Length: 209
Ligand code: PRP
Ligand code: URA
Image (cartoon, rainbow, N blue to C red):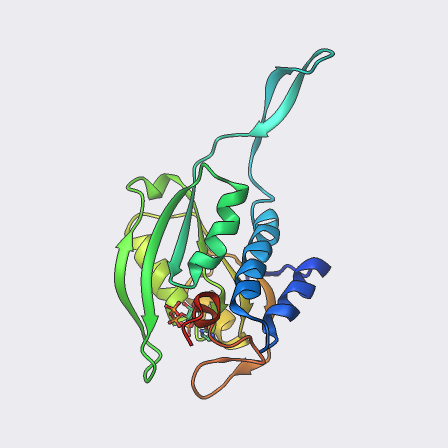
């Protein structure tokens, strides 16, 4: 069984279509990633625990639900993950943040690590790993491998677009880590790009190509 949720809310699907269009400029693309991140985050954090707290409204006292204070950590896979990170942090400003720097070797498509920094108590936190693209899944698998070595034991992975090949590979490597994505596209091309996809997410967020 694939541990994957497709978040197919109409607002997400509409915004994703705008992002896919090749004429969408960097400024709009960046804004859309941020908006979709919030909508995805809403779904990913649906099962956060609540507790009741005594408060007073202007009219009377009541016990009202608040987040139970379970610790959370977002981990961004650099650099495109930072596009999703901002939206997530808007929803949960008190969350801790980790970064795993990885780039895909363009020839082998192997993920190469160049940076790693996460909170020391990552083992006590729900870890939500964010990266817009799950293509071969080499990057996501390497990031989660590294986080588990560092003590993380409760993780979720959030992306915008996934390839069937990536979902399969990630699920095989980390069956305990649920995937949340806005869509699963058709396939990968020979260069490991998602088809029809949206191109290179990092380049489109940062305008580097
Ligand atoms: C992109 C993307 C993922 C990775 C996905 O990053 O943001 O991290 O590719 O591909 P995979 O599933 O085949 O590993 P890229 O390596 O282009 O680096 P960037 O974020 O710095 O642009
Ligand atoms: N990384 C991207 O940014 N886009 C793809 O289609 C595949 C990997």
